[in-house]
Image 1: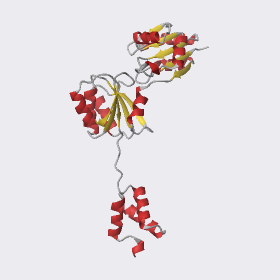
Image 2: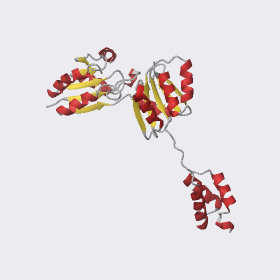
Image 3: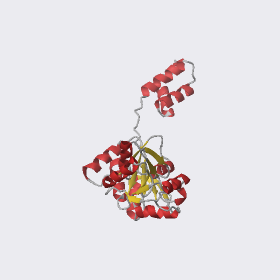
Length: 282
């Protein structure tokens, strides 16, 4: 019967984040396919694991390796898939391996764990009920411009990765497209020795990293676009009148209508008096 593909999340920096399940999975696999075999060999050594067959699996040779993954799964082997750090198939190689496993009817499981995306969202303090992960920005050209235009109107929190050599250019273009006052929280070197959390505006971030040489890996969490809701003062006044007609006091009626219509309470109170629209005064 077909074997099993295990998508394994590995530490993004701190080895203490390794789970017991990850250790047992890597130790028991028939083969490990890794984005960088040197880094994975170092990880296995730190965990005291004698490596099974260790095969490279990265963007440049991904298609060539799929045949071997298919063959191993077809004969019932357990194949572990790892990347340099974090979770495979999330802005990293792995998606094609999962598809091959589905094609041969192999079981696909995951050893969950470290992720720069969820780590950055958790520490950002920005809305997390709905967010979008958009990977790395395209390097240049029309694709980059289109992506920036989409992000400018995104009403969910946005998570982006940025490389050391490109973070200043990314921040500059994001500031131009989204506006300098858009809030951004930057996680740098997450879980590593020199971990940094920085919060400010895109303008402040661009200014800072134009003066400080960027170092390490960057994860950007950008606040969503908040669209201004049109203020319907007439509807708020009408609601105040209706509530007053039902016997509610003027302060209570104004408070409720202000909340319902997102109108400043003092301004609404003044509008009621100016318009003479309080039934109790007639």
